Length: 229
Image 1: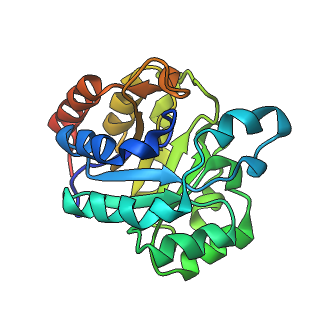
Image 2: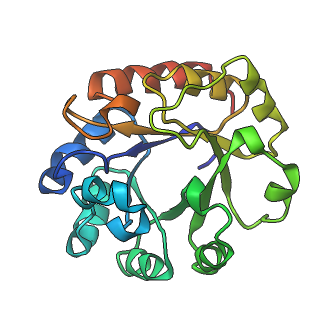
Image 3: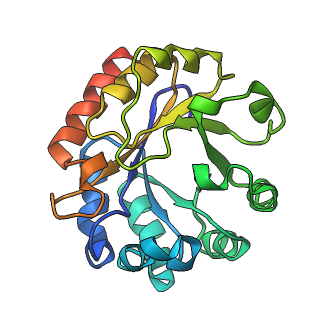
């Protein structure tokens, strides 16, 4: 994170994605991403009506070390979204490079304190539609604040995204849109980090807000061509 655009490929929305970690991480690297990220949620973190779907894509904790090692082998940083203190412990034991707090956890102060205390780089998503500057200023130890729309899929008001310029630097964007025009707009508004979901198949649970490798690679090349460090 040295001033160039930092692109995070979220790879945790495929059916049984973890039996093919090598392919997913290899695709992220080939697309030009800087990092791969998984999510350490448990199905119980979600409302009952979502748990059956989420249980299918729970990350197996015994493969967390494999994920980090594979990411590093391909030159990628390895990140993990955390949802409770035990997730932080597991992520640290596997030596992940950064921790991410999802928008649903933006008011979870215990989790935020724990992530900051870990000594790892911390990213934190927030609902940019309800952005309050003090929410950012109160947490100077969080390295990156990523605006997002916490809907799946989400539709961003591209004309209103100029408000991202009001978010103190360094700022970023976590995309849940079907395409990547919101990412383009975010970079034009000064985003230095882009997080986007990567998938292989239209059958993947997160395909409605993901890009396939060809699309992802095209996005990365375009965003880097307009990013000003």
